[in-house]
Structures are given as structure tokens and as C-alpha cells.
Image (cartoon, rainbow, N blue to C red; front, side, top):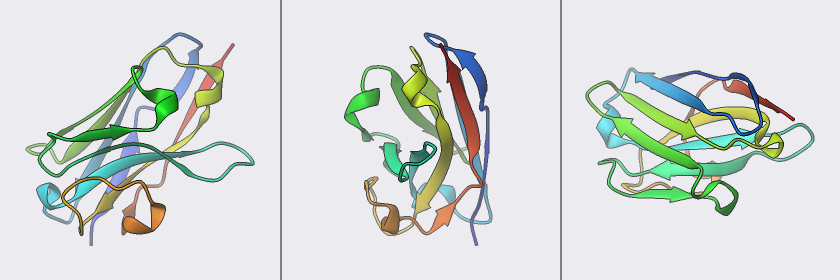
Length: 125
């Protein structure tokens, strides 16, 4: 059973940066593709970024392309989300997720078997 723990959320002004981390335990980390999702108040959870098992292939939703970077360190069992040029519309609870069935990250929620508890990101104007 994989457990995921996120950290790094907080309050930041628009234009600022945050780096989220998600550390896994209880599984073989490099067997999972990983992704970050977010859920804003009153909205459905949405895909933000995903990364392949090897870390060589990344995928981003259009609103964050050029501002967010996903990466992973398999030796540390950790996936990161570097968020730059933050906007108020990035405010949400961010959760990481692990998919044991695909070598590349998929965008659908149902693909992911394991989820972290989430970390709040608030961007003020």
C-alpha cells in the first residue's frame, strides 16, 4: 500500500513561486507514474501535471504550461511541482497521485490508485 504525503503549500502573492513536494512510502516508487491534481472551491478536481516513471516524459494542462514544472527524484521517492508566476486562479488544494498501471502519466482521475491528503495553495492578488 502506497502512502503519499504532500508538503510545500501556503499563501503567496500573485507572481510568486512555490514548490510542492510529494513523498511516497510503502511501494517501489519508480514503478508508478505520478501526477498532480488540484481542486478549487466549487470546482471538480483537475489534472495539472504528470510525469512518467523514469521522469523523462512530462505532461501539463494548458493553463500551467510555461509556469509549472514537474520533476521526480526516484532515489528520494519524491515528486515535485515547481510553480512560478502564480495567479489567483491557481488557488486550490493540490494533491499528488500514483498510477501503478502506466509508464506515462495519464490525465484521468480514475487511472490513479493512490492519493495524498492534499496541500492548500492560496494566491492573493
